[in-house]
Image 1 (cartoon, helix red, strand yellow):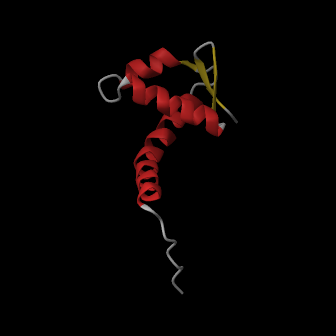
Image 2 (image 1 turned 90 degrees about the vertical axis):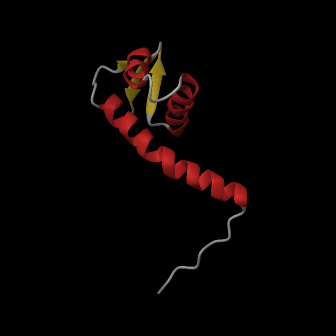
Length: 82
């Protein structure tokens, strides 16, 4: 049986589309951070992404992961939450 499709206004559709594009990037960033048991300096992570992601977008992604509870940032040292 098909599930009914909820009605979404244009703003909700924009948010949903943006999340769909950003979620895989956030997952990869989390995986990289989690692969470093002692954490990774935020500047080092940004340096790896330089040229692919601008600083404003990078800060937005890091802050989004912090607010979601996936990582912590202490003195610019990023660590994954287990």
